[in-house]
Length: 262
Ligand SMILES: [Zn+2]
Ligand SMILES: [Zn+2]
View 1 (cartoon, rainbow, N blue to C red):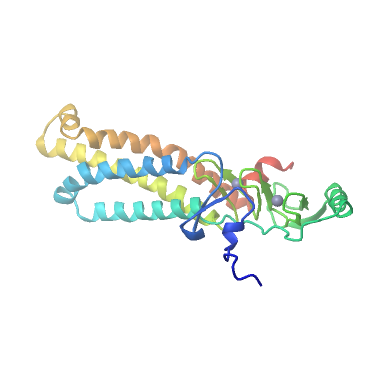
View 2 (cartoon, protein in one colour):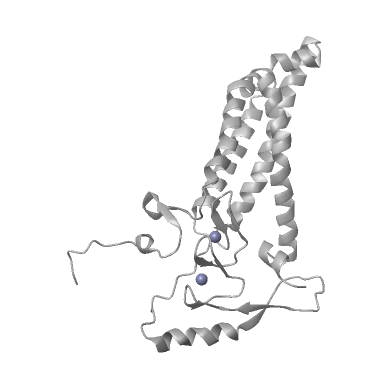
């Protein structure tokens, strides 16, 4: 054994498109890193909330409300980091690379006649089982399990691949689906809660001062803007969360629901 060669960790020899940070504890895959934009879209309004709305709510309404908001924010950011930066379920590649032309030709016919297995998916007609193919991946050189697919952005086979999320710059698969669902659910809750507290700021001030709504908006313009942002910002994550609850009730993932013929 050559001791002069530096010992490389697995992530340093990873053949796919994922880029690793923090000694392999954080990964990102894809061409454009929108995940920083998503983080900014949460962090900037949250910062404004703590600067302009939370102190008034803390002193005039209830101290528990900003604490609950902080908890939901923490849950949302942590699940964002986990879903965007953790392994989505990458299946290891076959390390026995073929060396001869004969071996290269062997992979061809395997892909022409795929096997198929029955999986426990609920379909429209429960009497009809769903057959999913087990294909040979010529890039990873493995027979990938049913419900796994090769992601072109990650350049890896992903177990139970739901979709490649451009916003999180990562695939959503077997190992990070729970974090992804927690993220969209907590993001919806965060947007609702922020909008509610910001409207509470404006309307409570108006009620206590016996003033007009225009005067209340002039008193707390940032809270009013955050309330509107919260209402508009809740639409997309809420729709996505409801869609995934629907998929979970059917035992399917996004790719299966969209791509597989019924
Ligand atoms: Zn593959
Ligand atoms: Zn991917």
